Image 1: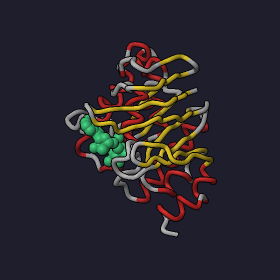
Image 2: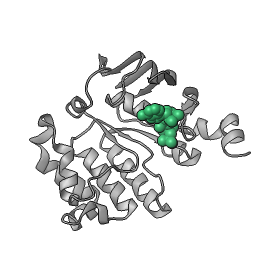
Image 3: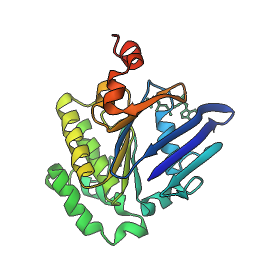
Length: 234
Ligand SMILES: Nc1ncnc2c1ncn2[C@@H]1O[C@H](COP(=O)(O)OP(=O)(O)OP(=O)(O)O)[C@@H](O)[C@H]1O
């Protein structure tokens, strides 16, 4: 469904991505793994339209989407959960979650989507009235994912969804990824940890200094000599 072909991105005069090509198929879970600063977030920002590629094309179901404003993407079925959650701390859980259905193209189905995200994350129903800023990191991440799901995406992108979370919460987020994927939603996520990336994805890409250096199935990536040597110290 998503095809990124040969994109480059510059921040001012500084190029940070070169010739990035990746795909996400319908119903796939795909991981982009790479060290700090390798350009993972920039790939997702380019797809959602927060940064404009200097080269290459991005298509969704064969139609070009590069250059479209980020707020159009909800209507096209693509949603991004930003790193470090970016909630509105002075707003309640419910207010934050409802922001995800703000776009006119998706507002009409807000009620049924809210029921769905409350089923996926019972904590959202339990804590509807709590200020988001008063929640733990893991709870905030759940609210952020719920907000991303309110637009009813076909492709949910998540920037480092496990960052700084306790193992128990990581396991819950993995479970949620499986559940939403089982409903046919494709997922593209970034992660720095080899195991978290590739054991939870059908396919994966390894990004180094702004270039994709390896790609394959999750299992093939986990077992690849270079991944084992450089990232697992084997
Ligand atoms: N708004 C910006 N202006 C200038 N340079 C930026 C900007 N955002 C990111 N960069 C630089 O672009 C490079 C890639 O950053 P990016 O955030 O995409 O990497 P990342 O792999 O997601 O890293 P992290 O794990 O730290 O989020 C880094 O060198 C970063 O310093």
